[in-house]
Length: 357
Image (cartoon, rainbow, N blue to C red; front, side, top):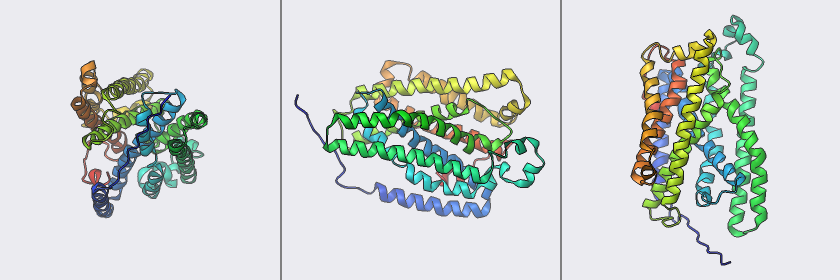
């Protein structure tokens, strides 16, 4: 067997990184101004933006582990992209610091006077307290960063050493890594999003967040590949068949996300327990209903119809538009989860929603 080897790397960094840095500094400075004007709005906007980006990074980690576990062939040429995306997790750990600083603005369970007069919060105080919240976050990031670092290190070694043992090692790491990933992402979604309203609970919430996260990752990868192709790289290596497979994956997770969202709503509606239904009432019995309707039709119905046919999944232009739209809907979905806890009666879009991104 003849092994064909081709290495593709960026010899020049270009101006993209510099432009991104400048945009980031401007966003940081403007967010600082926003903190002085309205700290509660700033931290809620920041949490929405933070979860948006870390969910894409976690999607990259999941895709990489899934690739190793099922011994996939079609995704070999995509693996380095997913690895690059998951290797942003150490940066996200640093960017989590503002969330810690904003605990008192974000989570009402962090106020001792509130807990003192709330029997339900008193019963949850063993779990919902600031110290344990931070400890859990440290554990989450430790698991994600260690797993991604080990898999990335093996991948780099495999570039220079085509030993089967490296592939098996990656599989051995991915097996327990997938279990730990499921546990940590579920509890992270409980901590960072569901506990914003500590009276409400949903056992399916973790799967709901995961499905949306992976859908965001797939959309991000599609756009990244299209950008790479426009630079003249990986043509003939990442082909229309890969776009078709990514389109099928995206279509499948559009349905999976919608199934999780509907299941969560249907069971709470059917159970009709006040502690559960009030969460949806806050997002329907006022102008928030228009955001709810936008998510139903924009996050599910429209992309479902667009990507239904085989031809659309193989059309790069259609895939690109769908990916951009799904990323926008991903942000809207997170906004719908976070901001009603601050603006209970109507959506209130702020310029800080943009600067924190």
